Length: 237
Ligand SMILES: NC(=O)c1ccc[n+]([C@@H]2O[C@H](COP(=O)([O-])OP(=O)(O)OC[C@H]3O[C@@H](n4cnc5c(N)ncnc54)[C@H](O)[C@@H]3O)[C@@H](O)[C@H]2O)c1
Image 1 (tube, protein in one colour):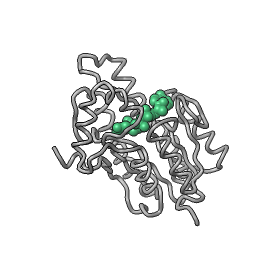
Image 2 (spheres, protein in one colour):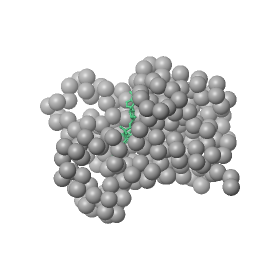
Image 3 (cartoon, rainbow, N blue to C red):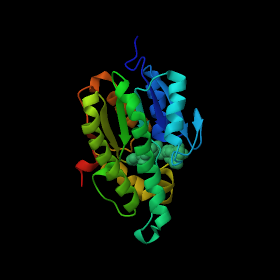
């Protein structure tokens, strides 16, 4: 049976772990060719997305391998709970460097190739903190608001070239990113399980499946949107 992403080629960063790894698996199952990158893990390219030339290196590798670029999914991200008083300049700048600047550079450099594709697609990874706030997440929430704003602006600018841009905004997902907080504060895990209307934490595959939909032709008329994928947690303030 034909896969819904047959013939599509693209990039997933942060693919060594969690949501990015699940996304690369899902996209390949759907027929896409995927170049994966991360600081660590079983990926095609080991690199630091904050390096100034990382985006260019990734795109060159994808063009060398595929000869085209149809989608980018910049999934690499960092998060940790940190009280405001612990937000040093370096901490704030590092969160912004990974979660915002690296995403911007990759998309900017990929844009000409995405515009040349018959179905260029961008899916960024925001968070419920793209729309709401939480204590201990000032830098992270700032970065994820920025990602949603970036995605909306990209949709407006690249839409006339046939490129869609959407932001997936996960709730609490069971990945190595959340594991330390859940281990240190079991009540925090229970809080999120109970807060979700669907009564559980998300799994990386819950997010990967929505990303695959947004990359597919089924989502061809969808752009500039934030997609909250949180099991209904934010329906229960
Ligand atoms: N887990 C959640 O609850 C949750 C919720 C909302 C949003 N998100 C977002 O989803 C995305 C994926 O997170 P995850 O939960 O899968 O976490 P994760 O820690 O499992 O995966 C993140 C990956 O990004 C990589 N990475 C970090 N900095 C990098 C750098 N400088 N260069 C290259 N790679 C780098 C890490 O090595 C890691 O493999 C992130 O953008 C995160 O902010 C996660």
